[in-house]
Length: 474
Image (cartoon, rainbow, N blue to C red; front, side, top):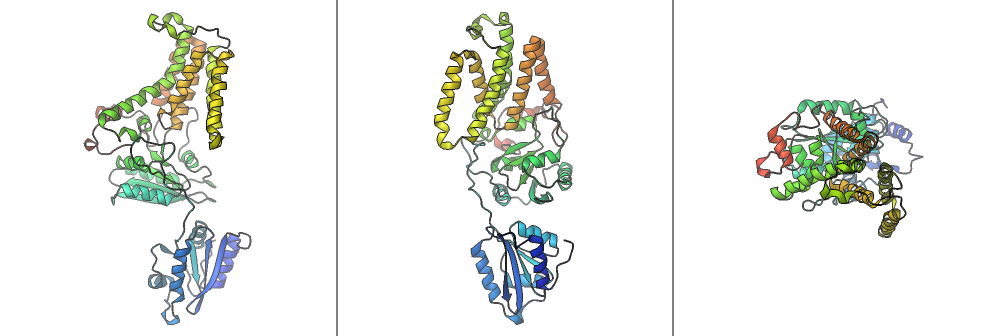
């Protein structure tokens, strides 16, 4: 691959035919043609090239006369190629990577370089609103699997020369495009350079799982701390506002999601809906999400603690005591239902859309009514677990939801074993897991609470007018 590009067309085509196995790979196509008095050949991947653009480019080539031919490929591209996305390649590594990325590469006898014509198009879906990051009001577009379209969606919202969009490649075999976006006048430049150095230093064969593979290469996470260090979003408006707040956005080709870093727990809980409504409504939505998220963690362990100590229940709340016979220990019921809820999630993901409604009705009847009547579960346990399962979707981060789930299970087990001391120990483990966590930039996961910044903390909790802050939604 270190061999230089030859000025003899046959040598170049023999090298590429051997390197790309064109006799075996039906989708790697090459054609020969005559440009003026010289032989030429070009390579491309079937399905990636825009036919109409190629037809127009070839029309210019066929109209060139022998006496008009330029002395080298650079002059040729300027004189006879009125297309905007062209490049001159001088080494085989770049040629092979461009061809396999969908770029058309042209060789002309007598020129010792390659002309790369980027007339590719990728199969893609429309930029529709993402299923996960929906809003009641606001933009209805979302990121797709093509990184060029994703950067265009961000550029559409930030028309500033300070916006930098740098492309890197990761993976020996996959050579996946990774785009790092930042605002030059707002980003922490030291952290930005450190992230780019980490990406360039990654030595893997491929990013098989796209962003998750990249995230695991960027930092060696502590497996015992499940709280996420990154925020993922499929919304261009959220990504754009994060850039304006000085964060870094990382886009990975073939992934419809953007990575926002550095990220604190306050960033993860925030959503775009907080800013698409007036300040009072936005504040209510944000505080509701904070309270509900906290309840999804505390509700079932607190209920178990009170059932173990019914004398602590105030007279006005005596109705929460389980009155029916308990056939299975309450802890076992909670743990079984925690597993069952995840089973239903997995089943819903693999259920054909046309069967979703009837199967949901069957699941509700069988797993709800009959499981209580059969004596497996008590109605109160089913009620509280149903609340936890539904309320878990009040915030959009899957990672945060599962982190709270793991902490909830630990607290349940400790409460069942050690009563009040176990409950306190479980809560303490959760608090320490959050407080001792660090963002990728090394800062506190609880900023602006720790270290304390009253002005920023107020803005994190209460939604204020957009004109009075230097960002927007995040």
